[in-house]
Image (cartoon, helix red, strand yellow):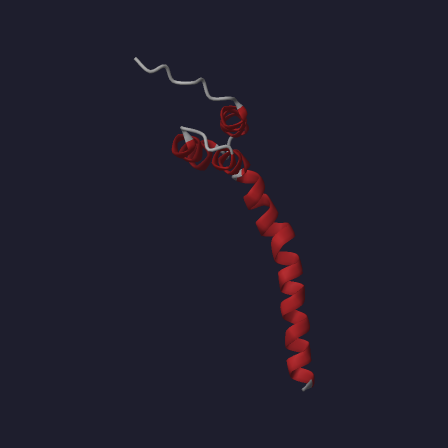
Length: 78
């Protein structure tokens, strides 16, 4: 019984430490992609790929964030 209790405490601590150290940075890294997906952008895949491959550089992440936050220009039907 005591062993099961210790295992539950260990699992709880593992979950409490996992999100702040791994989950939150992952969410912050993909924030431009999450914003693009939430706003139903036309270029969601392109924003995701830019974020995935160039998001490690601050410039690539900022470009992806601005692109995701920018309003889409309506397409003109001809």
